[in-house]
Length: 559
Image 1 (cartoon, rainbow, N blue to C red):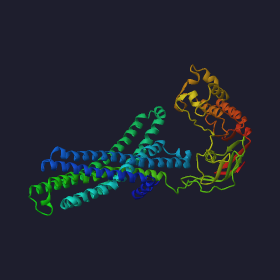
Image 2: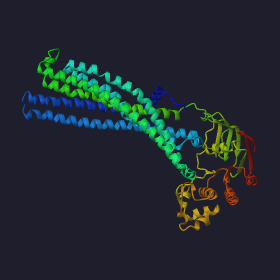
Image 3: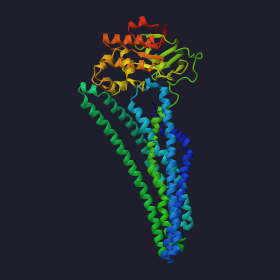
Image 4: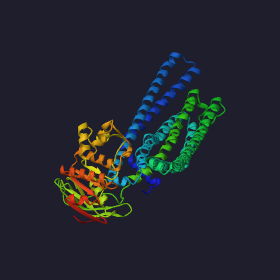
């Protein structure tokens, strides 16, 4: 996957925000309302101080203003709660749609192509990188609006009270975004490295964890641990670099904001003391001076918050670079927009018309393959290694999307209905025998499970165990022989009663006894009327198959 530039990633983030724009605008509107309530609250506080200290007003005269201050505080709290709610809805909308698009993309790629990539990296994209967009849509975008609307409202209020104080605020405000942008240029690159390293670390750790048994057998656990430690240390260093940039930008912001507030405080202090006679200074009162002084921090507060969320933007740009590459269009393995061939019939188990598969590296997996398989047939796919047998099976299963042509199973797209799959490495999870069998038939009774095991010659093995069907099995079938694991997966096909079963070298690597038990079980399965397609070199299938299809260099020779 080629990495997009920062400008392309920013454009991609902007395109993704369209469904969330109403929520973002509502969040900004609620934030502006909170700012208005804050201005009213601070005006009330300044007026109470002026009336009590300068005009010596009684408590009765101040009570109604105090009530208005309380109301303003309530409005502000309600508005902030609404802002947070709308902001969260904006983020949820974008992330939910993005995960839907990722699922669709994964489906188009197919499990065969996804299997070439680390599941840790894919999980990091699905979880960490999508979550990294939350701050951008929930905080940064609404704050971009608020850092304009709120300072403008406060600046207008200060201008009404004292134009010289407003001038100080106006001159200091542009310096903060300028230095934020300069510091943020480095933050974007660091956050992209952060996301890339996180994905690699996830895949690296998961690969070592899956191969732990092999590493122990070859006494390679110590070097593998050192590799993980080195990868983790790289991730730590990038994290620390990102934190250094964050602290630097915060320090820059606080410095200029503190200097500006200090200048305004000095101006108001000397103006009230009568040392400054320029412009509106002689008209300063305790109310106007205190009000301006209270508003000054609020003027910079939206910019402070934007500085905090600016790193959300940098993080989102790093994640967007990865996600956009995953969701990128125009790649060579995309399905054709218009399938080629006649309309598929539901009476055909499998129908393939002018099918072509081209891999990422330019290799041709299948070239202009057309065939039809009738329900109940047992079809054998033959050919040398690399001839396209597994690719054709993956196409029938929907694990792989064709580059051109059309494929249908029972008149529908592959994978539209459940089907059976038996490969050389069956899926067995850490569970009981019953739990592994009920993966395909959750409501099956124990009698049905034992009957399915009997079909594959495993009933006696399970019955001899003290716990019977409740006997535990380790992850991946550890503790079982290759033939037992393969037959356990085969027993699931008897339970599920699929119309179509696809098998990729089901007898590879088995001893003669296990091999014959698998062949006999497949013959029994075929007698039930199941359509079976097998890719195998085993001579026993040549006698039992209804048809033999030969493949060479991705082309169908005969059948």
